[in-house]
Image (cartoon, rainbow, N blue to C red; front, top):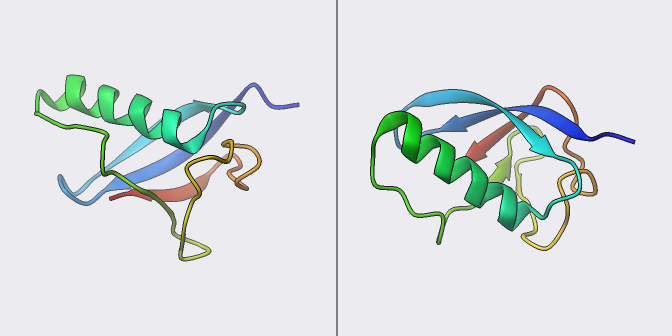
Length: 83
């Protein structure tokens, strides 16, 4: 079983890509909150996680907030977009 899953996340608002280690068992909603917090601190910007969505670039689909990272099909190297 995976503990952490490493994904590439593109954030078009800043036109930057980040590599995140996401806990496999947390919800997509919680993972969005973690990513927003890290981006906010790293880039020193105002960024709220409310209203952000996580998009699977390969499947061209939004990920369900209630599903976990692992159950959503996110695997190491997955390309995601935070919009």
